[in-house]
Length: 66
Length: 274
Ligand SMILES: Cc1ncc(C[n+]2csc(CCOP(=O)(O)OP(=O)(O)O)c2C)c(N)n1
Ligand code: SF4
Ligand code: SF4
Ligand code: SF4
Ligand SMILES: [Mg+2]
Image (cartoon, rainbow over all chains, first blue to last red; front, side, top):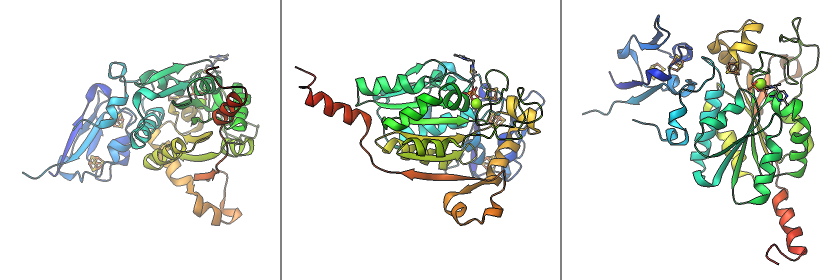
């Protein structure tokens, strides 16, 4: 995993925009209508999800190597 | 890591009340990122909005804000700018707010070249009141007031702004977030009437009526149909099909702004202190 995904769950409305624009199928919307990470290892920290989330609910940072 | 743009939002008001997938949140973030990019002082920046879903944005933004009357954001903003020209005044308006009930205020704001940055959230519909057609609903698109599709021709608000005298005119979309931020930042730089049309999705009142209820699909439509101005200018006419539209900076000229002209009158008349 070379990225860190932060989710502010109370803000998420489950619109699916992040899911649709993620090039690596990292994200999904669960049955409660909230975003969830289903394949963290595939994340390339491209930031497409964060860029277009209308609710500022998802943030991705490149992991700083320890 | 907490994002620096969060300081421009009234945190106790979030999450905002817009529908899931509504484009307004994306455009609102682009505005605060443009403000940050230009280093505007938060205490010297005023946000003025009209009425509509889009105009609710002022309630979430941590500046001095004015949520005014339907169609009347530009006159309120003009008053603020003339009373205190050192303030940065940003106007948030909708396609209905700006080009229907507020149409005259819009063209005369352009004509006077008032130093405002006006961001029109164009979702092609009256979102707040349940989906009536606006003057910017594209011909043939459906609305509650146009169940068989609008027969009216729609305004191109950018061409309208330019013809009326605006000195900075640009368009972008909720898909092209960084480009949209740049277009707004350029408008902040221009001393005069700056107009930025932000095409954004209303999945609830427009999308559902027009076979595009999925907000992500609406954004893919923007991605697939927006053409950067340089490419648009080279595009043969037969390729400029009904759905395609240009984005980018369309016009930018330097002209005396209204507050400067007004100040000259104050000086001729003997100065404000006398
Ligand atoms: C004087 C007046 N007339 C009508 C209304 C009803 N009204 C509220 S919002 C709106 C249209 C909003 O459309 P738009 O500006 O496109 O904003 P959106 O909700 O789509 O963001 C109308 C007609 C009103 N509030 N005030
Ligand atoms: S784009 Fe944002 S609000 Fe929509 S599902 Fe993803 S995290 Fe939630
Ligand atoms: S950063 Fe890119 S790869 Fe990672 S979850 Fe977001 S969109 Fe997917
Ligand atoms: S009705 Fe449309 S414009 Fe209004 S909040 Fe819902 S999606 Fe957004
Ligand atoms: Mg509208």
